[in-house]
Image (tube, rainbow over all chains, first blue to last red; front, top):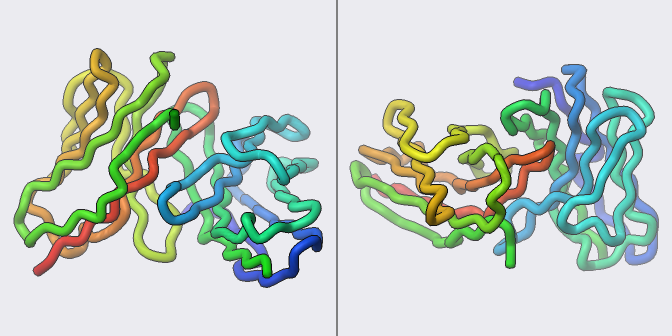
Length: 112
Length: 109
């Protein structure tokens, strides 16, 4: 299995609170991604990174920010969580050639 | 319009059936086309990928791309209960992987 871990795996929080999800890799891959998965929508790209301090927006980036200060860590932050951000969040990593992404186990976030 | 469109199903077939899963895409830029499989409560895993029109086979699985009609297909022969999962088509270009909605498949013994 690719060395990728997400934390926390489960979180329940209240509307308006900040939330940070962490993705950590041990593969030294250049690309890292954050997706959210919701019924009927499949996986939607939030943000991705193509190197340290290099990030770009995906399909559904509003309300989310990311940071990558080290190759191995990619953080996803919800500055003020809303109920519409209740979802399962997946981190993924890639060497960046053919589109083969390796996914983490997911982080289930519930915003009450 | 979503970049990659996929019928979400669900799709239920008897064991041994041939399964056909389909997607359409809208962007014509050079890209790879992928099929990922996702079991319940797990992250997706790459099943197959191709970058050219035509067919690519891997055991019981065949991926087909028709660039003229912007159509992607996955065929599963002799389907097994262990094939029950969600199948996601995707296109990869310039570092971004964009998925379709995913089709949930159930293969009944």
